[in-house]
Structures are given as structure tokens and as C-alpha cells.
Length: 203
Image (cartoon, rainbow, N blue to C red; front, top):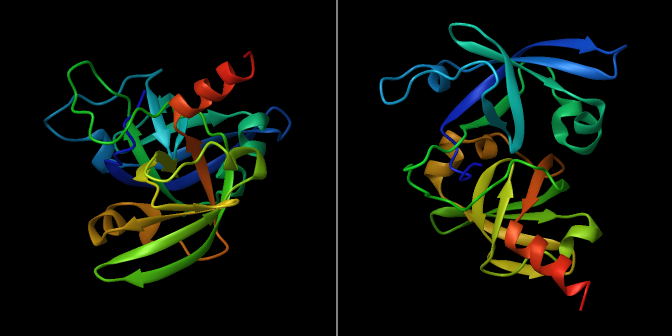
């Protein structure tokens, strides 16, 4: 489990095809995530959210870690488009007693959305995204959504689009400072919405 509060920006440093090229091992440089005195470094098998996708650390270096992504993950997230140099939002999994600053995020990406606009609004930027039609009903105004692993509050919803405001701090410490209209992003809907919808199917 995660909170959607990004704690470091990593950089893809190597890609190695696995399983006949269908799967992929990704090495991610992340000195800020792996160092520090407030928390020991992750161990093999640790869960790390990589731009919203929960992945398992299968190899660790002094300032990098490696994860394996299956063909399923590559096909249904943005990971299949990552290249050497791609910047990645990173968050380590929650520990009991950690501050829950965002909302509960599982790291299970529900779909890929598209940036359709980024317009300055006062001191922040209003971002708008288009979502797959199957996910649109799960996103509600003033509800929560994770975009590339960043916990955000939905400002407005119109059909298959929604908007959020990004303050300068968030843009500086996440991939939002690098995104532009047309870019793809990983989306995770609020898990409460997912279960309420499932229960409603059995009424």
C-alpha cells in the first residue's frame, strides 16, 4: 500500500528484455529513494511504486534498483513506452505508523489516460486528462485519483475528462514538471469507488 505522496524522482538507466522480449527488467537510478537516515534502504522483494505501478525490487545497487515488468504490465501501463532517461515518480510502501498524507493507493494501475491541457491558473496549473470510457464513472468531483502515482483531488469531471490543480511544489518534485499535452499517464481510481461499483452490480 502507498499514499500517493511521491518521495523521489528516479531515472531509467537500463532496459533488458526478458522472456523472449515480452517481459522487461528495468534498472532505475534513485539515490534519493535508497539513501537517507530516516529509513533503512529497501531489501530484495520490497514493493516500490514506479509512476503509480507497484513493482518488486529484484536487484539492488548502491544508488539504483531493478524491477521486472511482465508483458501484462507493459501492455496496460505506460511502462511499455519507457526508455533510458525516462523520469519516474517513486514511493516506497507504507509502514505501520507512517503518516497518511494522500489517500490509500494500491499501486494497481486501472488504465492509461492522456494529458489534454495544462493551463496556468493563479499560482498553480490546471491539468486536464482524458480517461478510458470504462473508468470515467469511477472519477467524481472532490474525490481522489492517482495520476502517475501522485495522489490528487479531482476538481471537476465532464464526461470522460477530469481536472486537477498542481501547485509549484508538486510540479518540482514529480513528473508533472515534465509532462505536456498528449503524454500518457498511469491512472488508479479510488479503491472505495471500485468496491462500491462492484457491490452495486449485485443489487
